[in-house]
Length: 166
Image 1 (cartoon, one colour):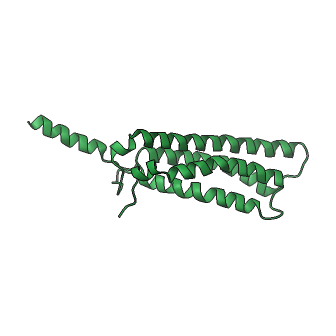
Image 2: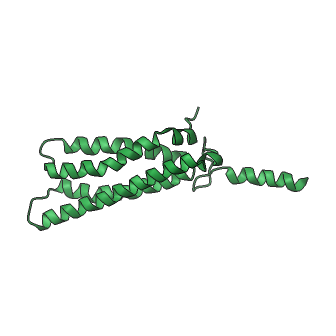
Image 3: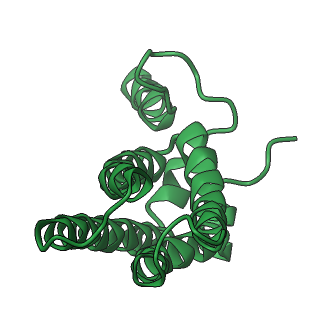
């Protein structure tokens, strides 16, 4: 009898989520929701989108290097953006992994970034004179997987795993 009670208590402790500092995560999803096949598939999609975005960002950086190396003008804005966007891919990947492990905070940040980034990146690129059209096109292509991640993060599978706190 005491053994069964101990197992139940241990099981409940194992499914309780904490962040890296050891404090409780309010509203952390139940372990069963995180292991649901639809949830796992959705997180797989988000992670894959982030990896594609990172690869495209690296290609964008190499394109800027090649253009500058061939003697064509490359402004400071293009250099800074070309360096920063692949770095942001690392952040997005870390957030996606943390969210897939139950971090509501990472999930919310991932959702915010995947929504704001495409709007901000493409919006700034549309300002006349900021960058050449070819560079704006490269940036739009880089944002396509981020848009897909934004849609997936807001999909029913992940909304069920991370219901809004009341």
